[in-house]
Amino acid sequence: MSTLNVLVIGGSGGIGAELIRQYQLWSAATGQPTQIYATYHNHEPRAESGVNWLHLDLRSTESIALMGEQLQQLQQTQQIQALDHWICCSGYLHGEFGEPEKAMKSLHGEKLLGDFAVNSIGPLLMLQSSLGLLKKSPLAKAAFLSAQVGSIEDNRSGGWYGYRMSKAALNMGIRCAAIECARWRQPPIIVALHPGTTLSGLSQPFTARRSPAPQSAHACAQDLFALINRLTLEHNGQFLRLNGEVIPW
Image (tube, rainbow, N blue to C red; front, side, top):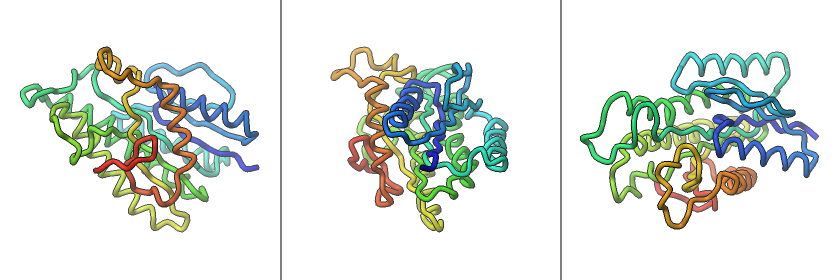
């Protein structure tokens, strides 16, 4: 049985860590050999069997380029021959650059640049760095965690400028990549996924009074894992909820 190679970008975050756990449980239950590569930004998680941690700063093109070189080195030394599942769980909503902008008067450049770096530019550059390994898989699956608020058609309330704009930009990049890569000899499945409101560091300040209560990262990861495993070529280039429903762009 060949090894399933998985890359989880943002593996130290709430959803990313739980998704890694889902792969580990599945591997133990099925006997499917699984090798997980996962990225962290600030503090390297504790070492554990079957998980290789790699540092990545999505705001830094140098860090992304270094990650690409590390992946190439792993391929050249035959430690990894292909990437089968590629999942980007990273996202930025609030932090050192400020809070989500509820009105245009709150816009400022550094916050917008930070949003685009983490939510759209960085993830797409990471996909670019991974293409060589994804091409080696008989059915590669690349899933980006996007957000329904990035849907232009679905926007009814406005606000949250930087987050909405950067997720909309991500969605366009995903759609372009899905069309381009469908021409490969072994076409991949590239999708945008809306995880739903989930308890995590990203959403915590904005979910205290939400009704119904947001889902746990564990529940989200369970649904995310199940959806990734049932994706087919027909899903390529789509924007989906975790239950498989299509979201308008």
